Length: 121
Figure 1 (cartoon, helix red, strand yellow):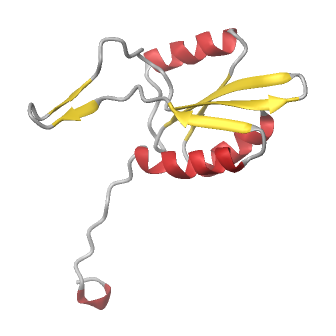
Figure 2: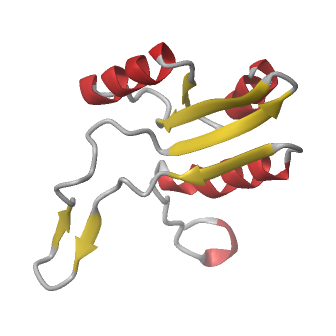
């Protein structure tokens, strides 16, 4: 038995648990606008499966944004991964294309990674 006589249930961390604090941090920064990409699968309760739309782009990162600088807006993206997880080949290729076109891409494991990355943008 755990403290206070309650059974402790250890909840598994999910990437999605990090989206809200990351977006709150980014959108609280001056001259920064960030959003969840919305490219994720949606659960179909009738069929009991996750479904992706055909127009969804494989590899698109979890969070996209723009940070205004004196020389203009700088596009950035964050692929959120739990500690020990790796980006897929599609995600790496998407970020390569994004950076080739002038964006800045990061793979982050926690809010601290985002804070450090934002200061570098």
